[in-house]
Each structure stands twice: as structure tokens, then as C-alpha cells.
Image 1: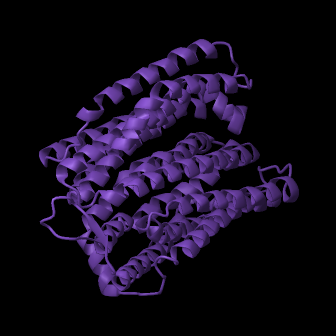
Image 2: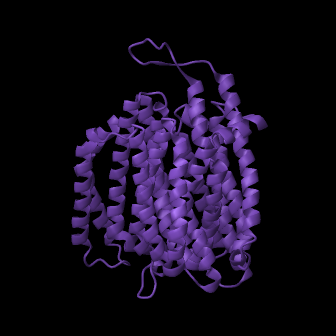
Length: 512
């Protein structure tokens, strides 16, 4: 258990460092590209992010479950104290690991080839020189990222997830170096309106992203092969059976993020940058900040999965209840800061072009609402893990499918009529619907996470959130967005919050 706790703490610390580097990447890219070209950049990455969820098809979670069951075996059923022995199953484990890797690579080739062909059938993409030339580069990055994702399995099986975080930081450093050369040496002071050098400069930004994905993949591969050697093992029967047997969960996994990622795609189609709409860039900047922060609580979920597959149902409910509490506390803090300092953060990272004006909604307006959306989304992810661990994961299909159908009927017309405002309304309502339905399904199958033992911590989290809003509102009154006086104010406010909640939060982590 101490090994699991250390693994979780290392992940959080390393990923905090990775998040800092991620903010630096956004700081370099956003003002350089501006709202229009940053919208194209976001469109490319989010277009393939939708397909990456389909290429994964839930394989990673299923692989972890099956490989973990192979690696660890219970000693004797009659023992009073549950113990586990690390039995010698290396050949069997390696064989199954390689089959899962081969299945992922097969899905990558098939799905991304289809995705690229479809992208060239979208008129608003083919008429945009930045998109038409950048889409193949975006596909290469997404494929490299997906490959690195499956190669991290040995790190999780052998409690070496710190190396994944190290790989993320190395990837960020490589990306920043290439960005610096591109922005300040090769293509300084570029006009991104029409010129050919501007397209090359835009592609250089995408090449930096590819370099980050390749760097992470190579590092994870080099470390992971020390635990499980990687050999090509194309087993068509295995791939067919694993996809068929888990098709409901795979489709549910894809649909769970579909309605969030598709927003950028719809905005880029209905409001293309070739017609000087900046909606995609404005939404993309807010979403980028949320995505960076999302890796921190996900580290807790990944570490919890090490020790959750074969514990009692009561223990699972208690563990997932604790994880839910941890998530709530983290994201209340994040939302509190975004409510108060959204204009300052957006101005610092992107400049005044991304701020709300009298005629245009900006990223600062979207950021607090997007924080609510992602909070609900991660709460839903807690239930996804819970359903997989209790063998109810196929029931996720109907939850997610219903939500997507409702979203298509309500969200798309609202986006067409009210653009970003329509998206915010439907997104919050639908994420809440997902969570409520997941709660209902868990209750029906006696798998509802138990939060009784953490109720006092929930109260502490709410109190901390109230302190953030009160202090922030008091200190924030006359600080303009272009002033850096908000930084010491943010430090003071969050220091007070940490002093208040740290003792309680420490106890929660021990329970987790």
C-alpha cells in the first residue's frame, strides 16, 4: 500500500511540474498565432482527439484489468488476511501485453486513415490552407500520442508511473525548444493572414507538437521494455474477440467525450476562420487550460486502479467515494480561481484579443463555465472506473448514447443560433444528466460510492471555496486584467485555502 501511495504522490508532483510547462507552451503559442490561427490549431488537435477516443475503444482500461489479473494471484482463499503474491507469469503477461499493443496499433492505422480521408471532404477545411496542410501533421501527433498511451502499461503494472510524468516533462521541454527556434529565429513577426511563410510557420508549431509526442513515446518505450519486452504479436483472433466482447464499453468510452470534443469541430464548420470567426480559438484557449489541469486528478485515479480490481464491493464503494471527494475538492479550488482570475489568466496567456468585449465573448467568459463542465465530466469518469471494476461497464453505453442523442437534438441547434452561449447551456445540463444517470445506475446495482466517511471533508471543501470567493472578490475589485498585481493576490488567497484544507486533505489521501 505504501508503494501505491508513493506512486500517486510522485505522479501528482511530476504532473504539477508538467502542468507548469504546459502553461508555458500555451503562453508561447497563443499570442503568436492569434485567435484565428489558434482556432485552426485547436481544430486540428481536437478533430483527431475525437478519433483517438474511437481508436482506443476502451482498450487501455480493459488491458489494465486483464493484465493486472494475470500479474497478481491470490494465495489461498481461506486466509483471514488478504495477501497477494507476485507470481511468475512473465511469459503469459508479455504475450498478452504485446497482443494489446498490436490491437491498439491496428486500430490506430484503421481509424486515423479514415479520419484523414473524411477531413478532406469537409468544405470549410479544404478551403483553409492552414487546415488542409496541417491535418496530416495533426494525425501524426495524435497517432504518436496514442502509441505512447498503450506503451505506458508496463509502468502502471509495476508502479513506475513517475516515468510517465518524466516523459511528459521531457516532451514539453523538447516542444518549447522547437517553439522557441520557430517563433524567435525561423519565423519571427509573421503575418498570418495570407502569406506562404505563414503556413510554414503554422506547420512548424505543429511539428513541435509531433516532437513532443514522439519524445514521450520513446521515453516510455525505453523504460517500459525493462519490465515487459515489446515484440510484434499480431493476433487477429485476439483483436477481433477483445473488440467484440467489449464493444458496448468501447462505444460508451467513445461517446463519453464525444459531445465535449465535437464542439470545436462544429464551431470550426459553422463559423470557419476563413470568414474571420474567432469562436474556435476563443473556446480552444479555455479548453486547453482545463485539459492541462485535468491530468492532476487523473493521476489519483490511475494509482487507485492498482489496488481496486479484486477488493470487496464495500471497499470499492468506499475507495471510489473517497476519490470523488478528492476530485470535488480539487475542482472547487480550480473553479474558484477561474471565477475570480479568469480575465487575468487569459490576458497573461493570450493577450487582449481573447478577452470579452462589448461585441464578442472571450475565453475569460467561458473558462469558469468550462470548469463546471469538466468537474462534472471527471465525476462521471469516477463512475466509469467504478463500473469497470464491478463488471457493469457495458451499462455505460446507454447512459452516454442517450446523452449524445439529446445533445444532438438540443445542443446543435443552440450552437447554430447562439454559438458559444448555446454550447455552455447544453454542455452543463448534459454533463449533469450524465452524472445523475450514472448515480442512478450505480444505486440500482448496489455500487453507489460511499461518501459518509468523507462528509466532513466535503464541508471543508465548500468552506474553502467560499473563502476563495470572499477573499478574491475583496482583493480583486480594482485589479485590471493587464496588471500583474493579480499574481500576489492569487498567491495569498490560495495559500490561505491550503492552510485551511491541508490537514483534512491529508486524511482523505490516506483513506484513498
